[in-house]
Structures are given as structure tokens and as C-alpha cells.
Picture 1: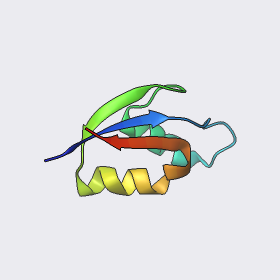
Picture 2: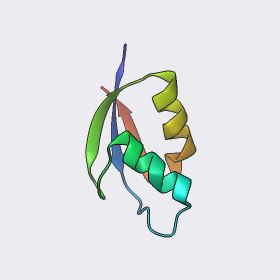
Picture 3: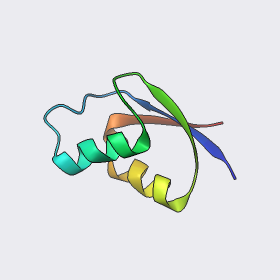
Length: 59
């Protein structure tokens, strides 16, 4: 299964609560913090929901 590196590039301040919870669920703690995750359908759905806040690259 492919892996993705997700980095937060825009702030979660002034965003809806569900978008903030999605950032936390992905494991992103602060700006420019990156995490590596498996590309499951659940993760891809979370990325799609907040793609305007993230930078995603395939590893």
C-alpha cells in the first residue's frame, strides 16, 4: 500500500470544528508539521475534506 506525507500549510484557526478535529485525527499538531500515513480510503477522505489546509505528496 502506498504511503503519503501530509504537511499542514495553512492555519486551522477560524475553521469549523469538524475541520480542526480532522487535523487532530490525522496526527498533525502545528503548522509545517508532517506525518507519514498509509493511503487508506478513510485517510484519503479526511485529506479530501481539508485539502485546502494541507500539502500532500506520495512517498
